[in-house]
Length: 273
Image (cartoon, rainbow, N blue to C red):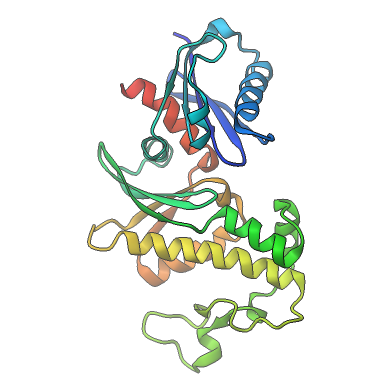
């Protein structure tokens, strides 16, 4: 039995994984000028790095917005397309072990996919995500480099940007600790340091996504959320989502291969057929 390749062709990056005997093999991601170049570049690099020959590839499964450009077998290998939301659900469920949860796919924007056993369905989304972070950083920080934005944010002080409950009350409010956010960017000044602005942007994007995810689960009985996508790599996730857990009594899960879950789900879809 050969290896099954899952490829997630996104707007800005392409992610690729192999699935062999139910195990994930060496996930990678690359960035290119366009989706087709990115896909073929990622595929070639993956085979080269892992010393895999074309004859060893049993199936290629592609998903993501860029998969629309693929209408023929890749290098003569059987290639199928997978619905992106189905791939999100399959990959997140496999990686997290959560059978009843809402998958929060934090990409350029953010989508919500509800998993309830074998039932996987897209329930909505918001236009806030990595694209928002990069766009605001271009305007406010004159950069879109993720590493530079993170570096600045690590030196920032959120108390100089956001209005917290402790700023407006001498005692915690019902269900709201003193360090909970009352208003995003409410304390920002015209001469705010770039470090504070960078942290403010990241916190705003992550909090907005978390709050929207919780609202998407209303009346569903679901308390578990699986975060996937590139934004899960931000170190601020380790501070923001535990705080939301305490406030709302929910659980946020970030799997080991969170950024590759959609590609993993694409590969899994072949076995699910």
